[in-house]
Length: 503
Image (cartoon, rainbow, N blue to C red):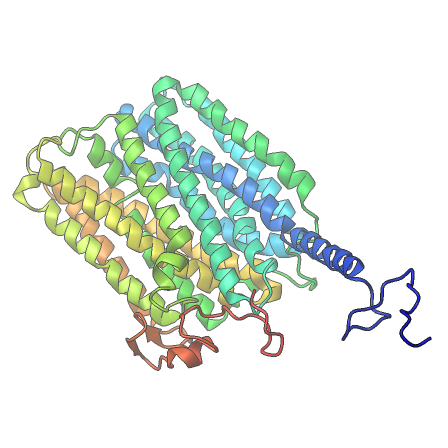
């Protein structure tokens, strides 16, 4: 009837503009929540190998730094020279180089899980051998024995490192280069920071007990082993092809070859003064005359600062300068900037203020610390750029082989730097200042060579920017480069233009 209200219905009518047959908002929310939950689980599953390998890799890294300090400072206390200690580390670096070749093939054939577990077990063997270092041995006997023990640790390090360096590529989609850059920088940075913790731990535990220090490090590996054994599948990192041989490792792209050669000289430039000459200079009465704990603390501070700067270099340096993700020009720029540090440190070591023994001369201590820690910061940016570029240039189905070859070059650079540094520090000039200055100047030569080699890499796209207003070498306008904004966050928009989504 007219004027009478229609009868009330038990069910609510759909609001204007909605389909009456559409699900209610509560059911829609439940469905959306289910999708989010499923998406989160899917993402966690995809990142699970990264999480597991990161845990084992980082625990291993603590022991890698600690054993370095254990051997170096224990040998110094027993009266070994810088050259003799450098010889102790030769097989550590040489076997690391050889292992990177074999590990690339092994990872491709048998998977990352196999190489990771093998590395952890070999680290236990190498650490266990150090229990046998006897005070009754002659120098030659001790050098031979410790060198073999260090060879085991060198093989272990690079078998373990293979997993840490390749998993970032395996869990990152090809189009998400910004995410890849940040994952690589974060993992490598935290690895180096924990290696710094290991440096301090090794020096501090040595003041307590040599044997106890070894036992603590073995304990870290025992904690890491179950993660590798039970947390990974045997298929991770394997290549379908059955024709993977050692010859395959040497068939690299031009970019990988040039980047590897540049890496050799880059890391050689650091180890020309850091691994042996600097600790000896800090302990020497003619140098600074510091106790073991202080030497360990300074080296740990260097490694930790280097690691943290590497982790945050994308956010704090490269993104503000519009250099993220980097290309070869960014690599060349930061290589060139690094050259300032060995020039400064070498020149300072030859001044008269370094002639006074000990650390009573404030200028001597301050200039050395400025040079060392400035090198750490700039070297961290270089290392972050290099670590990203190798996974960028790596072929998706051969990433273990590409990365293995690259870190073989890294190990040869460290080996070359360590041997040359021992010879220069021990035999150049009439005192430790002359030897230290020679190491810094040799470091400069290596930095220059690394910079020059990088020019041959074929990666010019994007040019070079230094902030919002300065661009060169074909750098496009920021709006074109970023695709939708002038923020300088390259790769920030990762979804297609029609999706309108930001990752």
